[in-house]
Image 1 (cartoon, rainbow, N blue to C red):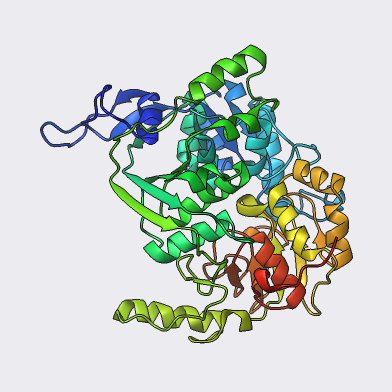
Image 2 (tube, rainbow, N blue to C red):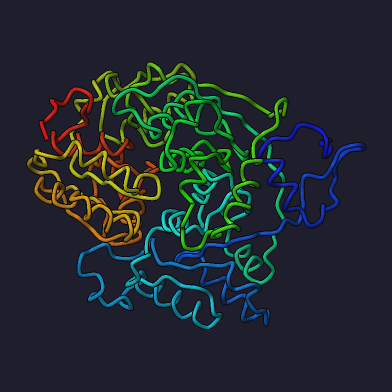
Length: 483
């Protein structure tokens, strides 16, 4: 049992500070219950997971508690076409979802960022941009990749539709306290090696379930050296390791990012908040349920070859041979058959049809800068369709101010509006049967980007390299083009 004076992890500090009441459970004598009613400070909503929640509010005669703690935005099903505002959003299932969200939030007076708003974007990109995401808070959203916000030292987690209704009505929810995994990252990332590669290498080494149901805290000087965008990518991908929560302790990088954000505290209140945020670190001697480590010094850019994020390999390697375990070998053969590749072939021999740069994993301005650095002065290979989809309209505006859009369009990339786009086949951006993509998104299971589509996950720079070569390529080997 953890006492107030015992060393605590960052996760335990966040949990303890939000417990309203411990829920009696079947714990043994001397053990504390892991279940508790916890307070939810902030709640993000999008169009694909909330309609049932609002219907439940109506049927139960409930109102929304503390409207200012909720924020809604359409992102998953929206069109990312340049003329999307002229597209009838009430046509088809996707348009109906967006229309229902707008109607529901208007009825319940919830702050809303509509499609024509300069702040619109993917919920996990625009939330931090606005300062809605803050260290030390609990944040819920009807999306598994809510873990992204843990990069700020927030206790952030995905919830289902029924829980969404509960949060809307009460700003509280019953949760089970998670076990903890400490991920120690040491060394220095090489050129063109990113936090996306770190995430894929971790999952490739320890398996897609190494943190199932756990709260993962990323630690070490390598993490401290990362930008907020890189940390968000790490916490976003924690879900692909089975985790429920990803965390990075806030520091001056976090504080500098949040200073001046419109929904963050301002002036003296910000300084008071920052003083508290600096206390949100795991205590020396705090115990975790598991610790894993990764040295980044020799890490190469990573790609996935199969239909699970743990099917990862270095770009300068080959598609691995079947494992000895019979069930694992069966899954290996199934993945190869679906992906249309063979064990032993060099990764760089895999040709691509489509390139997607974007998503809540890699749709931030830093990601677009990395991709543009590769695209500059080059052309998209013949037969390749390449999309660049900013994670938010603010990212899009910043990219255009820096001239990144010109670099992409001159190279032959399709420069899109903000949205989830080809990360998930819930809009018009999707793969056709048998098409193969180089994608900066987070999931590569069968059909994720379209029925029968084949997905290889990688970083933005690697995706851009695939676009201009027509195949998976080691971005480190491309000849540098003078500015």
